Length: 220
Image: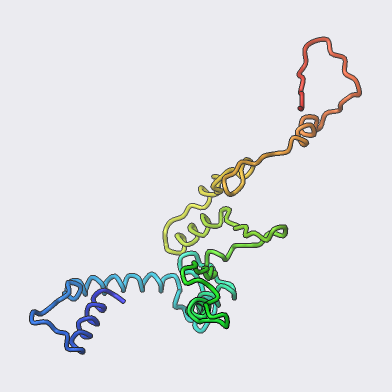
């Protein structure tokens, strides 16, 4: 709802309940120039949504939620969490009253009133690419170059010039994946692989006679 519509609803509500003042109160958002500016802004937003096919006919009646910015489609769990967020909040309020305000058979609530409440932790579009690990079931977000590529695709669909041949010649990851993990931590490496790399493709005799200085590698 734009500011001029809010101002109009506020003024009509005050008039409905007889709360008008002696002096006429006019919101600056209700001026003609401000209304025209808000209407133009709404039209520009609507044009962008139509250009990206948000209201296209093939998506009419679809129950799949789609992120306008990233084009990601929500899973069934994320869709239920977003569409039924009010029910989840209502259940938390009811649980708050039952645990802190209603007395049990012992004569006191089961929880102190001042205890902090737990968050619902509802799923959102940020959880689309979360996958559990097999070992400890911790979330491991697959980011890599997905964010960068989807921005390029959105820019290309929006009519902007994108030179993919030039872009794909450069590193697209935020960190060199051979040296560091995706979270920025450096890879530790394994010392046991060093010897194999040093002698790879070299025939090593059992004994070597040296007549001059040689390199000595000490592991310890």
